[in-house]
Image (tube, rainbow, N blue to C red):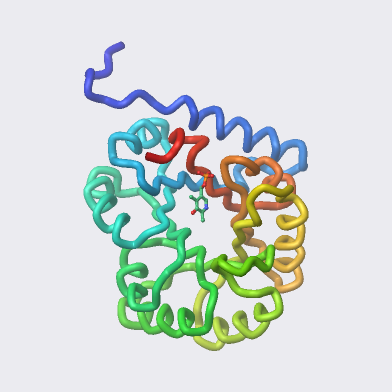
Amino acid sequence: MSEPATAAPPSTALAKTRDRIAAAARIARRRPEDVSLIAISKTQPAEAIRPLLAGGQRLFGENRVQEAAAKWPALRAEFPDIVLHLVGQLQSNKADEAVELFDCIHSLDRPSLVAALARAMDRTGKRVPCFVQVNIGAEEQKGGCAIADLPELLNAARAAGLPVIGLMCVPPAGIEAAPFFALLAKLAADNGFSGLSMGMSDDFETAVMLGATHVRVGSALFGERR
Ligand SMILES: *Cc1c(COP(=O)(O)O)cnc(C)c1O
């Protein structure tokens, strides 16, 4: 109405997604504010991101370092309170850049990356909280640490002084996700973590009911990826 024509209207998908998270949290007797909504903006241009910023969303996730480096510095100059998480696989040779660019890394999944991230954090003096990604469905092609290798990876991370805050997973596609979420929650509890990064557009309510502290939602917020 009195908005200038150029201002993006707040995203209605954002309001709807927040309501769905809050409803799932209440059913599970959890506080909605204990669930962080990460808007996964991979492949989306700045014009698609603006309606979410207009709706007050500040927490975003990207899956590629290069794409994030091209897209976010300009938006951050405008909205200094933006928080950016990396949710995609990370090559060790991009650890420095990732530590500079991101506020949290969800894809710590192997000893060589522990070493690279520890070096990068020492060099930059920036301590970036990490989730350890677990290959929860034991899928050949998928990133993530095998469940059997988790204790050793967590020990290595601890020894290197990495701030690990929880576990993350992407369950197998096409089958019910709930058992995998429940298994990740058990692994986290067994290892003393409260952080649980799980749940995407198709299953975030299930994830919230099973304890997710961070849900990673892309297409439900932005529509299909371009
Ligand atoms: C793309 C992506 C998401 C979001 O997926 P949607 O189904 O679009 O919600 C979440 N997590 C990771 C790791 C992703 O790569």
